Image (cartoon, rainbow, N blue to C red; front, side, top):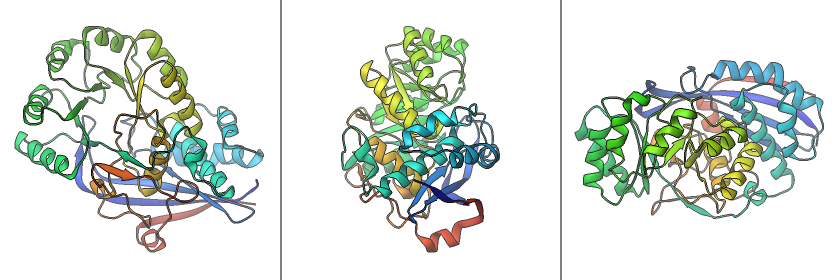
Length: 370
């Protein structure tokens, strides 16, 4: 397969409501689409989801754009690949920058599947056609608003709720939710906002029958997470810590966690995600799919990957209208009876709505032509 064209489309979509975490408040999501075209006219589309600020991880949108243009595209176009699995090794010549790598690698996977007239999930183990999903809820201004929002999303059918927490907004709101929704799959996400000095807070949470507590400590800290996990019956889940399979292996050997939030962009794409999923399956680590405020393109990739039978815990793959007034794909993700359908069709199954692309695209660039 020969690549003949690589295009970059830049977008900004406003959020329906501001999303607050311990990092700050997000009111809109900037992202790019990377479109690869082969000599037969097939197109593969991947999404660059890096945030504009270096708060979630160190990689930013501007950094990713530069690395894609200056480092990754030359590597991609100077090699001939017979399968997308080969891209990962070539990209290891560039350190880090996993979200940049994922944008191109997932686009190539989509292109490869379309070229062979197959759905992307045919390359994975298991192929469910619809998935139970959960929702992530930001830090709320009041407990009344928290209760109102939770009631709304539970009524819509979401199977699991993840509440963002920070010091001062943790035990009390979680206790309220557990009292009001005793059977709800409930978890907390700290986004690295705590230290071991906050151990008493986690000991209190340990009595709330939470599914897990996500990322309590620093994103490169495996040792303190291991100490905390030993103190709790509640599972610790690592998110920001996990960039590679070796990170998962480290967490497993140190017993830093019992669950992994797997975000495809954060680990560099589908190849590393497959390796991580395989390890988790073989070592009895709960693994589930997290979200990065993706548009319909990134969401379709998540849905295809999450259709594997190893994923039993509802992921952060919410309906299109959870975050955005509008989307850039023809068929929006709709929640029905707590489930979202996995897109059908070749590749990841999402088709761009050209009118929406024209409306929301703020810049277009041709990065390669040959």
